[in-house]
Image (cartoon, one colour):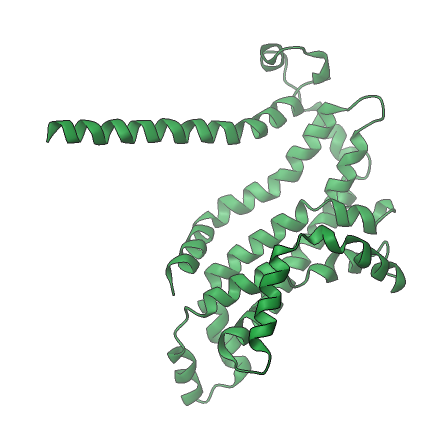
Length: 278
């Protein structure tokens, strides 16, 4: 018995040590970004300890906020991310609910096509989507940054999978009480699917907040650039302004960290609910 207890303790200790090492490896890039953002001209340091024990300053943050239209970039990213998140919650829920509950011709083919699109990287549609945006006159507009991502295959699949776990008796009871389709959809389905919708909203917000390629392609005017595109202008041809770049990146990561801290319980609950209910 003692030997088994010792083995369990030893295996648990090894697992904990491994998880701590993995956590440190994952946290270190964020720590390094924050450290460089608090240093004046960090490129002048040659070792980690010189960087760590040198004087700290908030100068990079104040200059980053005040320079190069940082505020406009931040607002643009916020508009795009919030709009696409809200649109995905509505449209992905509608499509996922229809696929989970309704019977119609071609349903299997439609679901197969959605799953097939999940396999294809979004960058494959880069050229045809750019030509379409140019032809309809959406270049340098918010429409180009929002409309193509208002509904996504991942969002549809995530909601569809969760909808299958919701008891259909809830809807039948509402119909008996005289509720119509839209009453059932907004007063029963939406509240019941809240955990997975929060996961979808956070995922969509994170994806669009960090998106670089398509905003870079669809905007060539400063007033429509998003934050990831704006940060690239800290990269010079001969040198990189590491202090201001890391300060801007830290400010860019701040909304994501705040959202995760606020909704971490709902995110975990939504992921577990979608995995366990069947």
